[in-house]
Image (cartoon, rainbow, N blue to C red; front, side, top):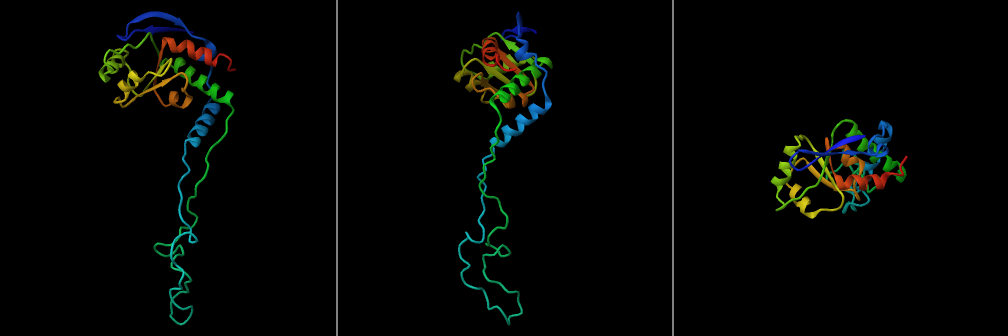
Length: 209
């Protein structure tokens, strides 16, 4: 697969050949859907908790005698029907984690990359050289590439200067090859990959089938 490489001004500087095993794989909707389900489930904290009638304080004394008052019988002021009583069937801490084979996770990432390439939403950038780590510098690059909507920038390695520059851009995210996952690719409309990161992606996922 052929793709164009642009500079920070949006001018084509060269053509590059992308590995079809990484950027030309036909996405499988069921695999990607399963990956998203597992990813979102594993990100749930599961810390919600309520107290049952056995855990709330008070309620040791019977409010009134069993018979003769004309009112319903009550044994405790902490039963779920009373204010400040326990909660019936409320949430308790739970582990929402799901398992998925590493190979399937990698394949989902490859399919996410391929989906951007096949839909022409992938842009290869020669490099990003920021002089002052200013947000407007990154904004200028996005404007020159004529991109709109949520955009993900992928670098070869962690770049603190670039991270500070995109921090104030609402629809721009930054990731690097070591932590890239399919979910953050899929939730972005546009994908910008630095030329140096393309080779790293191909080296990391070349064995995935």
